[in-house]
Image (cartoon, rainbow, N blue to C red):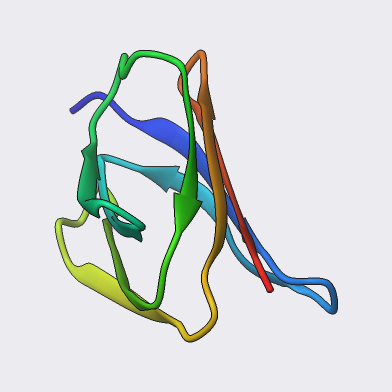
Length: 82
């Protein structure tokens, strides 16, 4: 299974850091799906659920109350939450 690196951070702490097979995040224009080898992207996130799947395929869910930003670059995804 192909995996990519994901970091979810707030100003206070790192909520998640690891390798995942997929990610769904709430952008301002709708939910974004991310898989391995996704094109480079920067997006503004809105409130909603961030759902990721690790290699075990069990979903992990984080809540984005105020939104933030998402950056995808060369199989590295960073989510900055406010």
